[in-house]
Image (cartoon, rainbow, N blue to C red; front, side, top):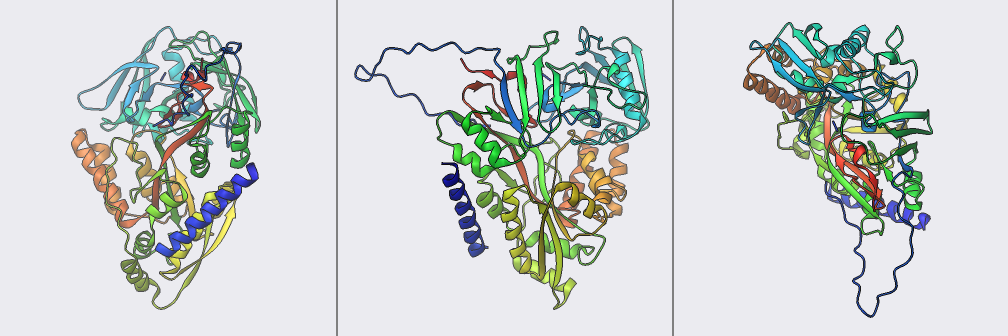
Length: 535
């Protein structure tokens, strides 16, 4: 069965390709097939079945380690609900209380005062209070700590922070050198993760399994195999439905899909949880459902802007104009994606929508202005473990061939890709970026400022005096309308100068067995504490 279905998927992808080339605590679920109506003719005596054990272990899986451990700045992803932030977000990415119950901004916008939740304990029994928060700020201030998720960087999440202090046992105050009216957006989720101070050694690194305040605690973590979660009975809020959840690491998407179909796992979580082609295959299947909603992830092409020809804005514009994004999202991702040319993901409240301009004739004109009558060959890097990216890269290479760019397609591991990009030893690369918080300046700073980390790490070579000035103006603006206007203009510039070439905004797409309940896609994963056994 598995072999034949795999062949069908491959044939479907090939056909799509051919048709496309010819043409150029802090989501909607798909229902399973209904049971047949009971009539006097088909009624049978009820079977004697044992009741569902609500405390039985639930096994899920993702493609990567969701708890990379002591060497990771966050130890584990927020998706596991082990640690909690001061500020979380609602389904529109607007800030919401979590470990901070309330807050107040000073009239000049330079001070934020936070009232902390009382009666909260960490998994190690330590009380959550202002001292614990200060200890976490001290740790953030030591150095930037790398992570599989987002860098733990106090300057990213707290730009222009001058001072943080304890006012009393359950009140802290942050003081900034400039007005910070959007600071709450900076602090959402990964921006204000809080751990027990006992978790850290003298260097601010984890000294064992992390202890947070979340509804789950980690009882076992075997790298590259699984992480075991257990309901935290002293949780301050609504307790988790499941007593224990095991999250396995299954990198290969076909193996992960087979495990779901066979019942080895009951659901998939995290980014790249399930490819769109396999999710579609589950539609209409007895015993399975799919859940989807907006994602914080955007997919794009990076171009080596430090060298010819992509150091010329006209060539970057030509590349964008030559792409047929709707063909990509519809043919390869079954509509689970929204074409865009905006560098900012659509999940933040500050997102501004722009028309997606695609014009092959105009692309050819711009490319000829740069290349003349010559052609150029560039190395095109993509992730070899993502099956759909191969077909995607072949489509994109065919379109770029029309404007004089010949692509040498190179599948490789993600880590190797990033090394080549940092060394400027590439031409084009397929990448992705999520939002660590809801503040647009975080993305603009990383990709569009001259010294931005992704600008440097990806060898984008992007520089704009106007963007630099707008970022300074926004940082100094107390008035939200003025700050938003700056953000709108920066987004507009990104659609004209293309520090990267956006392809599409992703959707959170997950599949699960209908033996579970509460499995609903959110902006960042699923709300794991709501997942439990269906009765």
